Amino acid sequence: MKSLASRGEQIKRPLHREMRDYAAKLGFEDMIYLNIGEPDFATPQPIIEAGKKAMEEGFTHYTGERGIKPLREALAEQLKASLGLEYNPEREIIVTGGSSEALFATIMALVDQGDEAIIFSPYYPPYFSAVIAAMGRPVLIPVEKENFNPVPEETLKKITGKTKLMMVNSPCNPTGAVYGENTLKALAEIAVDHDLYVISDEVYERFVFEGEKHVSIASFPGMAERTVVVGSFSKTYAMTGWRIGYVAGPEKAVSGILKLRGAVNVCASSISQKAALAALEKGEPYVSKMIREYDRRRKLVYEALSRVKGFKVSKPKGAFYLFPNISSLERDSFKFARFLAEKAHVVTSPGVGFGEAGEGHLRISYSASIENLKEAAERIRLTVEEGWEGTVST
Ligand SMILES: Cc1ncc(COP(=O)(O)O)c(C=O)c1O
Image (cartoon, rainbow, N blue to C red; front, top):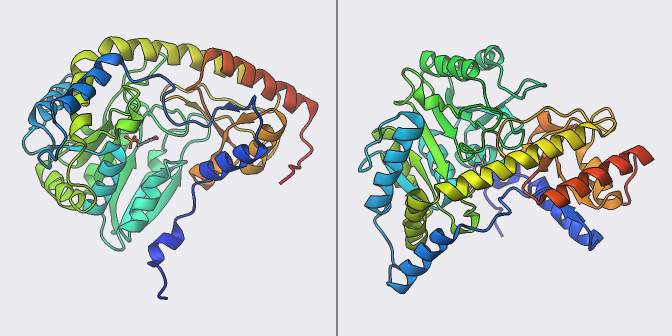
C-alpha cells in the first residue's frame, strides 16, 4: 500500500484530545472540565425557533454558494456597525460552515508552496495545520510573556522575501489576550510595508472585558484591502453545533476563497443560515446577558487561581480563557494537567498543545458554572498545596 500524503505527518493529534481521553480513562464521577472550548449556554430560543421553522418550511436544500442574501446583508450591516468597515454583500462576504471552514479555505487560497505564514505563538492549532496542508511554512513567533501580545519588533525580524501572510487572533485562544491598539497598529504597518495578507480571526470579538473595545486590524489604514476577517456564530450565540461562520474581505481574496471552499463544502447549512439570521436580528439581549456572566466568572477564576501557590496568572481581557504560568511548579504542562486531573479531578488543557511557547502554562476555560469554577479552583489550590511530587500514574 502506498503511503499517505506527507503533509499529515507534520500534524500531531491535538493534545486536548489526548487530555480528554486521559480524563475519560480516569473515570471520576466528580470530574470538573475546564478544558472546554465552547460556550456552556444553550443556543437562545429565538434562534432555535428559526432553525425549526426553516426545517418545517422545507428550507432544507443547498443555498447559493455564498450563502443566503439576507444573511450576507445583515452581516455587512453588522460589520459596518462593529468595525466601521463597508463590505459588499454580493462580492465580499461568504457564509461558511463555521469559521473553521473559513480559515481553511482562506489559508488554502492565500498560501502557496514554500510561502511563509506568521503565527503568533501560543496559537489556535488549526492555523498551523492549514498552513502545512497548503504546503506553506508556519513561522511561529512567541508573544510577550506577561500580556501575551505579539511583539512587533520580533515580528519584523522574521519577515523574509517569502512571507505572505500574518495570522491575527484577538481576543486570543488560548491566552485570553486582547491585542493593544498600538500593537495592532504596528502589526498593520508591518503588513502594509511588506505587502502581507492578514487573516484576522475575530471569533471572540464580543468577549472583551475590562472596558476594552474590540478593534479589528482591518480597520487601520491600508488594511481593508489586505485583510480577510473571519467570524463565527459559534461562541457569540452559543451555536457551536450549528457550524456557521463567515469571511469578509477584499473581492479578489474572497473570489479565491470561494473557489477553494467549493472543494470542502457546497454551502453552509441552509437551516443554520436561517438560524444565524435570527441570531443577528434577535440575539443581542441574550448575548449581552451571557457576556455579563462570562465576566463574573472571569473575575472569580482569576482571583481564585491567583491564590494558588506557584500559579502566575495574567488577568485576561478577552475570550473565555485564562493561561496561568505554572512553570515554577512544573514545566511539562501535559504532565501537570494529568496530575490535576488525577488528584484534583479537574481537567485543564496543557499549554504546550498550543505551541512550544505555551509550555509551562495551562489553558483554563471559564465556560463553566460559577459553582463548578469555585469548586475546581479550590481543589486545584488544595492539591497544589499538598505538593507536586513530579509524578503521575501514566
Ligand atoms: C480562535 C478560534 N478560531 C476559530 C475557531 C473555530 O470555531 P468555529 O469553527 O466553531 O466557528 C475556534 C474554536 O474554538 C477558535 O477558538
